[in-house]
Image 1: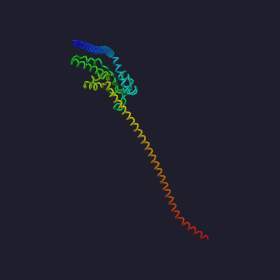
Image 2 (image 1 turned 135 degrees about the vertical axis):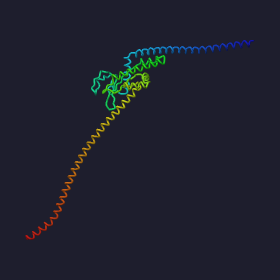
Image 3 (image 1 turned 180 degrees about the vertical axis):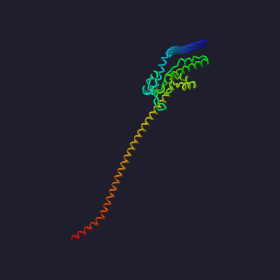
Image 4 (image 1 turned 60 degrees about the vertical axis):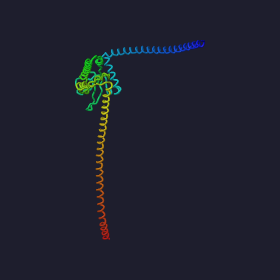
Length: 312
C-alpha cells in the first residue's frame, strides 16, 4: 500500500507541475494574444481617426471645388505648370491672361477686350506666326453627378448633362477667343483632370461635333503634351527652314559675287589677250622690218663700195 501511496503522490506532483507549466504557457499565450488584439484595436482606432480626417479633408476639398473661382484658379495653375515645364519660361512661346485686343491684328478688325487664360505662339500652314488660345475649364459638378446615378436611365441623363456643360463651354471659347487674323482657327479646352477628360472624350461623335462645329479640341494633363510637342516640332521646322533660307541667300550672294569675279577675270583675260595680240603684232612687224633691213644692207654696202672706188 505504501508504494501505491508514493505513486499517487508522484502522479499528483507531476500533474501539479504539468498544470503549472500549461497554465503558465497558456497564460503567456493569452497575454500575448490579448496584447496583439489590443494593439490591433489601437491601430484600428488610429486608422479610423485617419479615415475620418481624410473624409473631413475630402469634404473640405469638395466644398472648396464647389467655388467656380477656385476651380478656375486650380485649372490655370495646373496648365501654367505644364507649359512652364515644356515650353520654357513665360513670354518666350506662351503668355498668360492675354487680352486678345492687345495682340497684333493683321486685318485691323475691332475686337472686344476678351481675356483668355493662355495663348501659345504657333506656326501656321502658311509659315506665319499665330496665337493658339487655350482656356481651362473644370466641370467637376456635372462630372460628380454621374456617379450619383441610381439607374441606367438616370446615368444616361446625367452623362448628357455633362456633355451639355462641355458643349456650352466649347461654344463660349469659340465665340470669345477665335479671332481671324490674330488666333489660329481652332482653340484648346484644357480639363485639369484626366478622369474628367476621359469622360469627355468617351463619345467620339461628341468630340467630332466639338472639333467641327466649334473648332475646339479637348485636352487633359496627359494629352496636352501632345499638342505642346507638335508646337515644338513646328518651331523646330520653322527655325530649320529659316536657316535654310539664310543659307540659300548666302549661296545666292556667293554665286553673284563669283559671277562678278568671273566677269572681271574674263575682262582681264580679254585685256591680257589684246596685249598679247598687240605684242605679237609688234613682234611680227619687227621681224618684217629686220628681214627687209637684212635684204637692203648688202645692196647698200655694195653701192657704197662702188661709190668709194669712183671717187678714188
